[in-house]
Image (cartoon, rainbow, N blue to C red; front, side):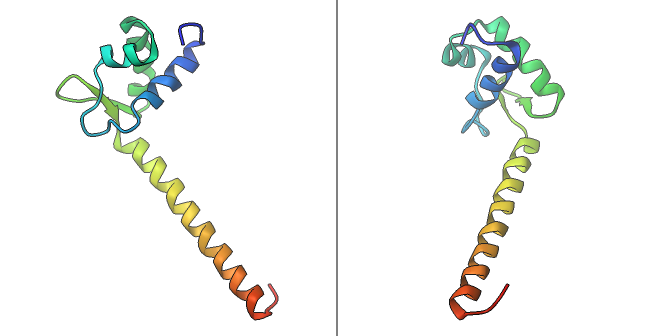
Length: 99
């Protein structure tokens, strides 16, 4: 990862926090996971924190915020609606109805 752009580094940090919402990861853990220096991780965390996607927990570790979880939930809701619509269309087709 050391050869990526700063935007790529930010996105990799965001992805590295996946599954760590409750306990978070330390700067050092993120750095080790991504084969980056802690300084570069600090720089990558700054815009994520500023944009409300990552928070620093009381323990000093970093985790996704409720905001990013809301984005994920909105996507899941949209996919559920799409599945319901597909099921409705399939039922109509099976019954011989027109759309």
